[in-house]
Each structure stands twice: as structure tokens, then as C-alpha cells.
Image 1: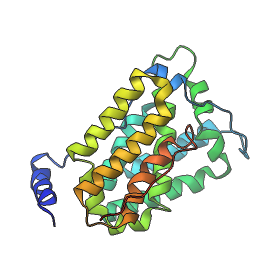
Image 2: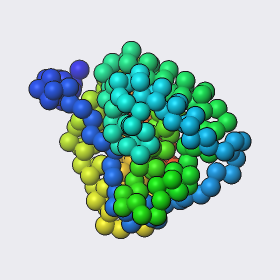
Image 3: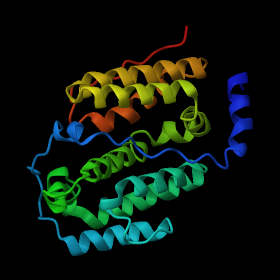
Length: 240
């Protein structure tokens, strides 16, 4: 274990389990530049009653009430991610809940877990329109780490999670947030810069890790921005 990692391990208990920060919230102008399209492949229209029931059942496992639905996406996302962070057992249990929610939503998934539908539910008078974007991104993230990325996540669980507390990653994240808020039209190039910055930061943090872990870092971020930025690419960095 490297000196950097040893120091970080020593710090984590002092941080009181160090909850992960909430997903970034941008200014309204940023969200207004992003895609809001009606689902083109939805098999069934969204049934709000069933949608709410499925969300309530999902929430129950995490010990939170049904009011933590898509309208409180930031709080919901943070609760789920912090639960998954505890250990590989909680990670797998959370993935099981994601699978159960997905199976219950079935053919309504595309019509309910959709920015266009949720934005319309907010109404034109809403002052904060971030929730639909954060909610959809949460499920995109879970889909990756609980499916295609699961094996790598489990094999490198501790390293991947401690990395998110490093100064270098935090700087990458903050620079992305500042850049996009300053120029909403820079969303996609800024996202590519953020992904590359994070990959480089991980390479510096644990240079002895395989290139596949670098791919995980990249892909885990990319899936949250891919809908708006389909040309984003993951360039895996190999240790020398």
C-alpha cells in the first residue's frame, strides 16, 4: 500500500465515515442547454402511481421515506451512494435493489426515468430544475457500476472509493463545475477535460494499478454525460 493511501486511510475515521458529497448542481442556464426529448422507444406511458410505489419500495431498503423521490434526487442519490460506499456487501445489496426497481418498472422505464417527462411534471414555475437531470444520471451511474463495471468495482472497491476523497479528484470536479457554470455551452468539452483529469489523478494516486481500473474511472464518469455528449471517449492511461 502506498504512502498516499496509508495517509488517506488514517484520515477517513477522523472524517466521521466521510460521506461522499452530493452530485454537482449546476446553474439553471446549464440545464437549459441540455437535451430534453420525449422518449422514442417507451413501450408504456408512465403510471405515476406505480412509479411512486416502486420508488417507495426502493427507498424502504435504504431507510428513507417515500418523499425522497425524483423531486429530491440529490438527497436520494447521496443516500444510495453513501450506503454503497460502506463495503462490498452493501454495494451488492444496493445493486440488488436497483435490479428489483428496474424489473418492477419494466416497460415503463423509458417513459418514467426520462428528463422530458419529469421536467413537465415540475411545471414552468419551477425555480430549480436540476432534479430530473440528477435523478436520471443516478440510474445511469447505477446501471454501469452494477452491470458492466461490477467486477472491476468489487475487485478494486477500496481504492476506487478512497480516490474520491483525494485533493486531485476534488480539484478536477470543481474545475469542471466552475467551467460549465461560467460557460454553459462548454458542457461537453469540459466533461471530456474532467474525465481526462480524473483519469490522470487516479494514475498519480495509484500508479501501480492496471489500465482497466483507469477505464472504470473514466467510464463511471462518462455514462453520466453521454446522453448530452455522445462523442465523449475514454482514453485509458497505462503506467510506465
